[in-house]
Length: 317
Image (cartoon, rainbow, N blue to C red; front, side, top):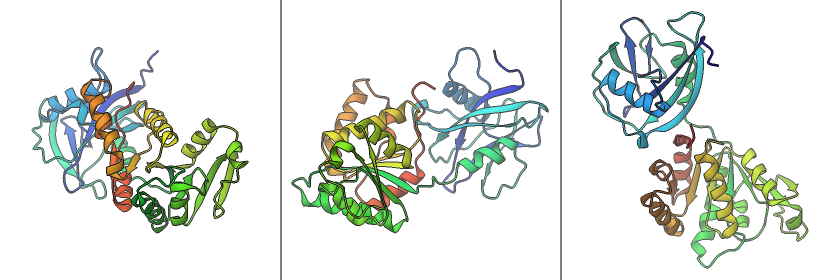
């Protein structure tokens, strides 16, 4: 049964080139909030946010172009004793010219760091803080246990480790000294290895680990690496790397986690990206999941993209 004291809404964050957020004020309130409102009938939350935005500020949004910021709750601004819970989506930076309509008295671009107007508690205390750049303190790296035939891949792996070190980020990886796994560990300054008992028996571990964790199965290994990390990066590799990558990517699409995933080395990953484009064209993957793929050739560029990343709308939201 729905709690009558909880008001459920859906809203969209629009940002301009200066990072300001489009906010609206209703005729009945002195406080600004995001464009959005309550669901009607059987519409989804994304459909609600799109419809309300169109009605309130005259902006038409393609649902495939929005990301997912999260769900937030706070005391209702205009209804004492009630709590508002908002499912909030993100729209890419835009230079739209809002046209307030319906119940909206005013639309304004507001700097989240220095607002120049009264804000609803939900916007001020929950949503604006969530718009800050993502903090990344540990990255799980999946990579080949072989060096491969292209020396550039080994150099790329080591440069990723060095970039993690430059940014004070801990490397979380499989713990091996072999192949690209060993190269990325050589470049990193702090590393946590997660090995299975089977692989540990072959003495494959990298000796410079800050910490080694030994688990029973490959499934436990993947789960533990994901648990320890704020983001995931895949370097060139083989079947094991693809297994790890696709498990994390599938979980991301389902909304089981909201961690960014990056592919480093565009030339190596080009065939995979082409296959993903094919799956989108054939209707087996959402365009938004393709749009949220992060691919880069420079490790520092990749880290910047991962910090700025927002997740796709979960498939079953």
